[in-house]
Length: 220
Image (cartoon, rainbow, N blue to C red; front, side):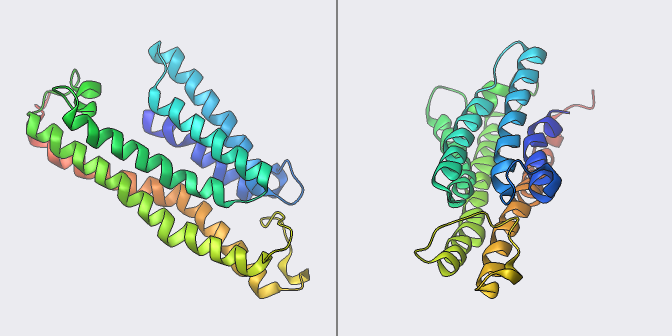
């Protein structure tokens, strides 16, 4: 249930971006998706608060990054900011997890989940490194395979000219249809990765974690 709640904002981002009837702006699905995701994260935080009686720090940090990078994307009219948000946020989470190994006598994951799972300290350390390095890996994949190619595609298409929404643009009616299509496809590929890529890689980390802890958890 919590896994679905965590990925609900990302799924809504994808749905709004892909469905033109849900766009608040006539030609810009990305901006509409950012606004929808921001509302979804606020709802996610509220649900977590009602269910647990407290705010989850990771959700608050995620909202701050979303509002910051998403706000810059809309204000400056450049999708690159929201694309970088994924890498920056995952790097921050990774550094926090890894740094927690040297702060205090327990890692962050052990402090969060230690009451529910009694594991040897070495296992907590390995899980922390797994998720820390996993988050760094996701950040690198996002940057190298999606953000940087999108930056280059946008630069080739827009040049020094005025930027405008790509998601609702009919490239066949543009003076540079091939460059337009490349820029549009780069943006759409990143949106696909934001949902399916991050979710798929997170599931891989979860499966590896389950395999690591399974022999230490009693059947009950």
